[in-house]
View 1 (cartoon, rainbow over the protein chains, first blue to last red):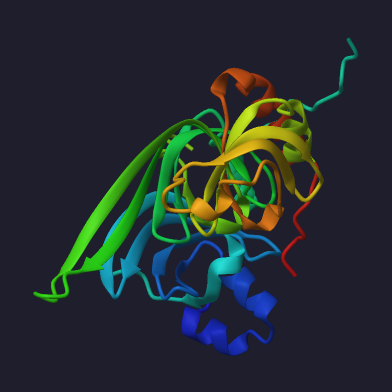
View 2: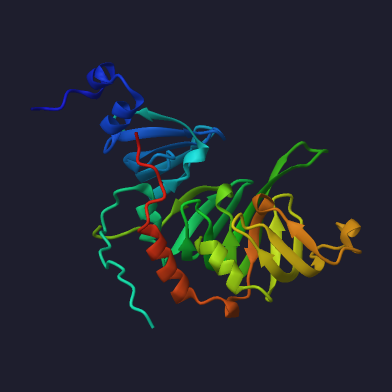
Length: 88
Length: 103
Length: 99
């Protein structure tokens, strides 16, 4: 069966866990408590909300500051994880 | 000498985020810390708190100073080195391994 | 436990502990516990002019949570042993699975 588009999936998901499972392998925006944003492909995460991202871009005040092939983000810094559309 | 049964399986797949750090052992990594500090060094050890031992370390501290007369923001970087450094994990924001090829 | 065991092997060595408030203290490592609290002897502050209030202090206890870095003598560190220990520790699951 084909995967439904992400918007539709988001409406179907009922729990945070389901949301996280659905966004693994998809592009996400991770916002840290400091306000810094990371955009990348979510490889995986653990119970501390430690995050592994691929093709990561770091945005400070909305400006692209760095790129990382792989990035590990320590979970305590994470404010939220948001599913995003594929980068234009 | 006792032989410990350490399984030699080291799957190269990243199944949990800490695998990314494990696969960087003996490699130079980039670490972003609280307080506008960055480190580059060779990873010798880490644990689940992201406590780390780095070798041949270069620390970069970014300081934004404001010239009171001209009100200009002056960005200054301070560089330090250390041959061997223990880093407490609670200050870690991000760890980036060297780019892996063929993984 | 990896770093607790590691620091125990460094007892007697001179180390520099940099705190989160930027104070850096050099001294002989005399003891460490599971929280990585640290006791130092024969201490001196790295920037003595900036922190003169510490000049008369000969030894100290540092709460682990206020430590930013500990600078170590490379000669006292067996990096191959550390890497093995880190790989071994990685096999014991310490991180809860995502729920």
